[in-house]
Image (cartoon, rainbow, N blue to C red):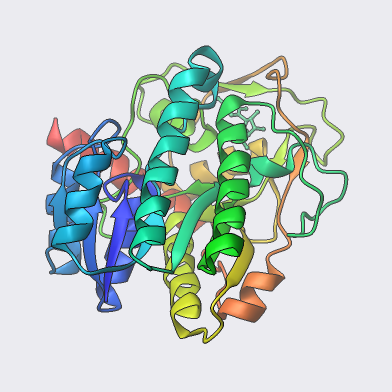
Length: 338
Ligand code: UDP
């Protein structure tokens, strides 16, 4: 079965492509390389021993998508292609709405016109905003996200749900908590692009001496040690969830499926716990200072991920320390390439 993976050279996309290939799916990747590099494709081949088909184009270009669907018998799609920088999304809202939503609609149009089902959307726990209950269930009410990026995810979900209901399609919305780590081979991971916004890339670069010190944004939160709590999920576990979600859609004999899953570990870790786990796992120091809270940050977010476990037979079971070890291996690999 041939699966289109948009953004398949990105962080979560590349790990998911490896898992799809392992499970004997044929993979067609479209990625415009706006946030990735060609060597990731070579590394996917090296890690998986298989060669996915690759097209480097911008998915806003409808005519190219049309040709792609003419050329390949695509039977499903995992849609990762999107801009994802929260801060940038506030500065360039139109770029974010245009890119993230047009890409989505262009692919859904092909699915509609060609009678294809099995669509998986890369969503985010940001759709819950500052949730009123913890842990966060799939039924926890959605709130308006703080960022334009988050809004593109929430709007994307709405578009897909309407699409699935009107045209009788099988879809799965996967709401990620905080993905971290890299492939155990050390050959795939998150590519650094400027100063990292996210915690783990910043911790890693600080340990490597690229950044002087980590700024911990607030230690006066009502948590165990005063720093904010998140649910950090290992990227390979996350990638495996996509395959499980896809297999469920394919196996379903219903003509309409509307699946929504939280993908997290179910455990919260504080910023200080992440720093300490990184230091312990890699025997390296992470200098830090305590700063003011970051505007827009929430105190605590962690998943109730039991629905995914029950329905997909999937569970994120890699420990924080192991995940952080792979991050460090990836950092060393990147340094060896320079
Ligand atoms: N964080 C931090 N210093 C940084 C980056 C992040 O203290 O340089 C904190 C941030 O305030 C939050 C947690 O780490 O509490 C996770 O932040 P991240 O940006 O990785 O994810 P998100 O805020 O989207 O959950």
